[in-house]
Image 1 (cartoon, rainbow, N blue to C red):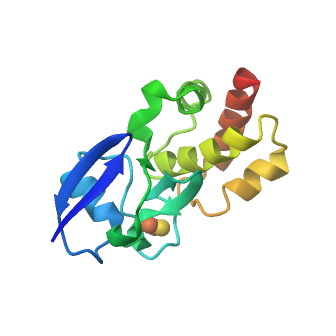
Image 2: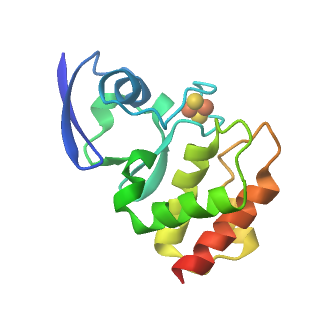
Length: 152
Ligand code: FES
């Protein structure tokens, strides 16, 4: 079946089972590589994207339930918050294997979009649904704090 979704402001048409996960359409049909397949069970956050200002796990989101623009890390050049996060993650060397990072940045963006001066605790709560197996959480936290300072 043909389904249309808007990704980073661009309308995309995909041939897919309407109940298949959004993540598959993003990666297989929309040239989106930032959202990753980690657990496929809604537990790790590697597949996180933003819909209606909310971080959403695209591996457990049926494509036929998506009726708003999907924001992914690929839009970082035109997004002030994602741009600041991108620079801060590099400056703090917050990436080890990198698999979790785009999901982390999606959660961080939704926080910084609504809270310009988050506390450490608020950042930790915002990242609750994102797991990092390499153990760079401390640097990720610092990177988000750096981005928040930059944006304030
Ligand atoms: Fe979606 Fe892990 S791949 S939450």
